[in-house]
Image (cartoon, rainbow, N blue to C red; front, side, top):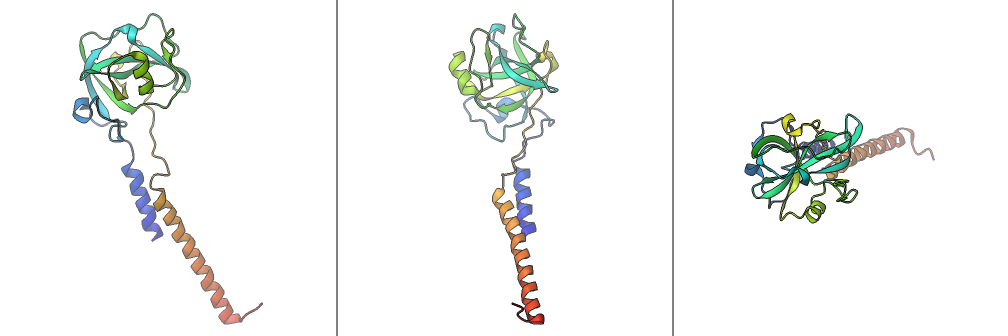
Length: 213
């Protein structure tokens, strides 16, 4: 029974594992829409994005982002996709540059990996166009767009990233608590088995040697 419960726990871990980013890209509009909630099915999904970049001066920087252990910033560009703005991480730089890097012109198609919106970080600074995290509700209030996609994308296209380096796609590991009930049950069965073995040993000892109290 313990082995079975631990097997169920493993199945929960596999089922909740994020999508592998190296799978073939699928058109974003086939799996997600600007009015839809970002779910675990979208997390780490590799997609093909077709849209138009907003003007270069509408880009901004996300601080405290690392590449190969070195702290720097993400260059983020709003891209109009399906009538709403999708936040796209173009790449990583050691520090912000001025003026803002130019953006691709006209309708552009590129590959990217989807990510959920981040937890709150340092607030928006309009003067430096920096923010501490890619939190979608905060950006919706600060940037003034009518609608934002509920997650963001990190491009894997070097031409889109230039002059920045490609940003690292964060690893999204499954928490050990997923399926925790089955893990607990599995451990309980081993405890019960140990207790049963102890009681058998004690009863057998008393039957052979008598009550030695």
